[in-house]
Length: 398
Image (tube, rainbow, N blue to C red; front, top):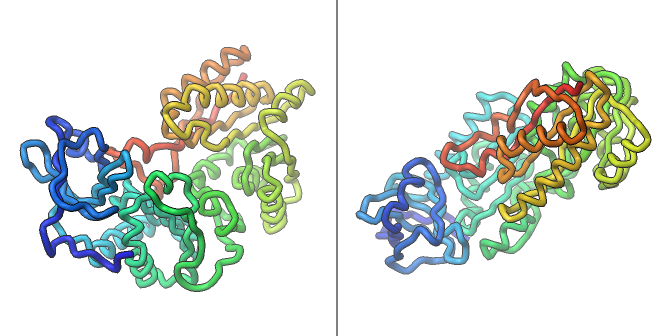
């Protein structure tokens, strides 16, 4: 673990790209892939810093290098500047300032990796608890620096690491969780759009709560009435909002009993007695409800990422289409469908095409009312296609 490596102290190893491979980097991409490299000069330490050059010798940037990863270099800067504590203090302060401007600062994504020019680093804030995830070996080497700077800038009660990401294995990193600063966090209560929400940062999915859907949950307000079915509900984000916004009944469905227990606790915390929970496989449940002839005024589909790789996209598309056509059949004429995908491989055009084909298969006319994306505290890097991952489409079904 480094306490801070001053990249200006000596010449760094040099990575030279193959001819014409510099264009993506010049257009904003922060990744250099192994097959784009012509050669490396110097002794590269695992996760160590390197300078990147175009084939004609033009300096392109400075970043982490991992010889074990297909993403061979993750760029931190386009300047030949020291990568030290001051560097991270500046970058983190800039990211935090943006989130203050955006609002919802009590519960937000403080750092979103490449989109904040801090590749491999995610930091979520839940009140006085910060949750850190690191997905790159180079960033892991600066973990102590990141924690120290975050503690100085925000004075949290706890900084907790949820480094139980499967993707860490591709970087040669172990999966680990635990307190990095302060005390054990316990359950954390946050406020979202006027609702009180309990977050389990230790045992919950990802960092404990899906902050990226905050604005999409608020968008339910005009469509929440009558009977609502919330599928893949996790700890109840959409269900709570639908109940608060005027639904008569809300059925929250998930396969996880622990998640449903959090739904019930969150409903009680907000005095919402119109939420019920169902533990079930959503695919099976939608089929059964269709056979029973059930109808809802609003159906919400927020599944996990079916396509976790490009090679899985075709089978994932079948899964997305299956739940969408089943969900559409449960929406009464004039009702609404909210359907989401959190896989960046399922691009917006592919997602909309899938919805169109699902509607055609069930003989329903659907009109798109809104096409939404992740919350603004998850900014989209123009050179980082993977940073645009969440799609949320609101439709009315005839």
